Length: 192
Image (cartoon, rainbow, N blue to C red):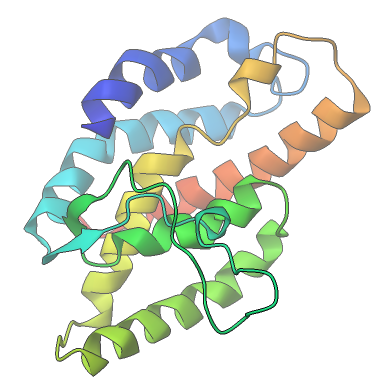
């Protein structure tokens, strides 16, 4: 649904526009543009693999911003914004949990690789405690594949690229270029 509803009609055409890549903040990103195009071609195959994985009920947008801890009681948290909840590949919710703060500019992209394996291990342990034994490779694919489809093509702040080039915009674009590069590399490394 995300692929046919958002990527095909909006994100892919926006990223394919030559004018976007002539923007002064993106004009030196030929390799990223080429790699985004290649990854876009791989999305249908990634979706096929995701559909073949064990399916679980997921939140659908489990970013840390949607898992607030009530003030004064750090032993609990609240889960909000269930609009995207439903069945998805095992590990899918880890993707937004993983990149949510990075996308918001509140987590350094350089910290992501170290957090990746920690999340997968903790998720597997949680599944195991409920009697579900799932191989780490399947969890990783569910996490990475879902995250790549959902976030790699929408990480660049395209809506902000039409205004004046300010220091703030320059910082935002640099940060999002780093996130996009990380996600694209993760996607291109996914096994077929």
